[in-house]
Structures are given as C-alpha cells and as structure tokens.
Length: 178
Image 1 (spheres, helix red, strand yellow):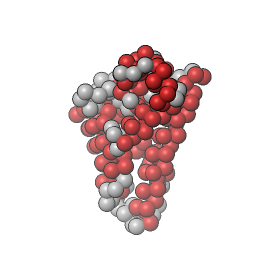
Image 2: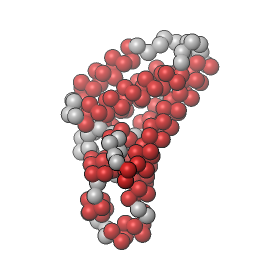
Image 3: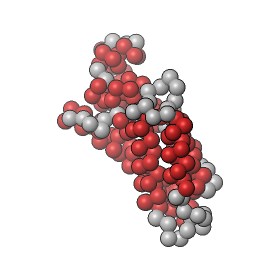
Image 4: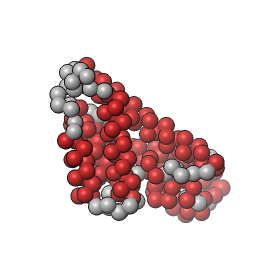
C-alpha cells in the first residue's frame, strides 16, 4: 500500500513492491495475481486504514459534523507522519498511460463511490431537516470531495498540516445552516 501511495501505480515497480513485501515475484503473483490485482488490494487496505476517516465521518449526527470530520480526516490522513504525503486515492493513478488504465479507472470508481456515500448522507440530512430543503446533496458531496482532493494535492506538494486545516475550516464557513 505504501509503495503505491508514495510512488503511484506506474511508478511502483514490481521490484519495489516485492521488496516492500519481502517476497519474490513468483510469490507475489501466487498470492495477489497481477499488479492490478495487488493495487486493488492495496486500495482496499488504504480504505480500511488511512482513509477510514470517511466511513467514520458518515456516522456523525449532523451534516455539518459529517463535513467537518471528513475534511479534518482528510487533513490528518494526507499529512500523517511516517506515511507518504497526499492520498493514494487521488494521486495513485491520475496520470497514467494505457497500461495503468485499470488502476486509474479503479480510483475514479473509488472516488465516485465515496462521493455517492456523502451524497446519500446529505440526502438523509435534508429529509431529517438537518439541511435546508433546497440544499443540493449531490453538489455538497462533490464540493466536499473536491476540497478534500485539493487538500491531498496540496499535502503531496508539501503544504503544512496547519495551513491545510485552515483551508478545511474556511470551506466549512460556507456550509449551509440547518
């Protein structure tokens, strides 16, 4: 997971991957299939580990608290000491050629799935009166995901955690009132 996170799909060589896992190529193919299959497993692990803040955020009692937890989690996950900066789900395969298209498509589906989860949670908030009836759950979800993705890109570029937290806090100032 960390090799793909730090180097991206195309930048991660089989030598890098097998070295990080302490296994041979033959063992890697036997255990994980091909590089694309290993990438998908790494993305699952990332989702359950560093990116698990997304699932936790959805459990918050109000839409504003969901948004705050999601953005705070994004800042923490993308600037975590001892881990690659940025987000595997954002930078893992944005700029890939044809050989990396499966990984790029997997990440697009991953980001879209998380946007859909946010949208559904915000629809629930509208139905419960926690968001105004004219709030657009799809737009709110896309807005949050766009800010979080931007935080990830900025983190990968070396922007400090405190500066990124200020961005997250600023984004929340435009959150619709209940």
